[in-house]
Image 1: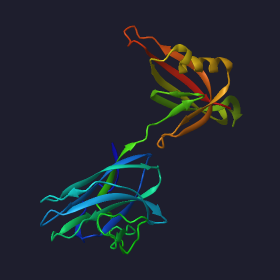
Image 2: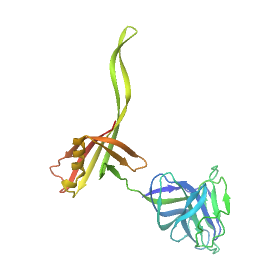
Image 3: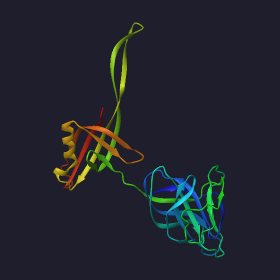
Image 4: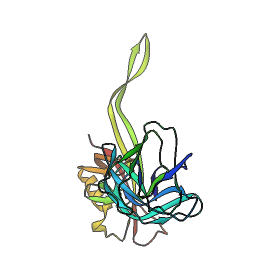
Length: 279
């Protein structure tokens, strides 16, 4: 599991009014699926209830409702409250609004916490929606300007990284990438001294990709397929959807090395593929 949002407990407290929604804007750093949202709050009387939700961004304001979570009941001490049951896909680099919605007033002073003194960080407020009906789209009735972040964050499952090479999807255990300089060296006279000079024509990326297969027949094996690609000398597409390490290159397969384990696991095949960026 991973998180995005503001997981620090802020230094400022304020009241959440009954039937009010407060939302803060955050950017996702990778693809994934939000499963729950936590907000830090507390009370000084009663047992108030609340919920959390996630909204799309609409030019810097909350827009369409993407999903809402379960109801939580605040306890007697300040703590992180969790609203679960969400199943909302998120995209790397995209902005979202995480929101908290307080239930009907039961006489409790329900507190939320945020960081103070952070210019340009604003909190959107909706005061028109009766709990627990989330407005869709969000209708902003007011702002807390330059207040800082709400203490609220989303919990999400990162998207699985898919790595493909040609027509095969690989089960990769490790990738090593290097960059080789392409050029020539030659001797030249400079101020009556013989020196080495280098002319650089460009560079080429290379990869060593460690893979594993389980219960795959040799006829269907990626190792078998890539050995054929290497023998033919044809270029194939090498791609990865990992936003932290994206790859989308045309490559040639230099070598496929099968690893023989004398005490290996039955029906498990390990191999290493050596690739070079195509010219």
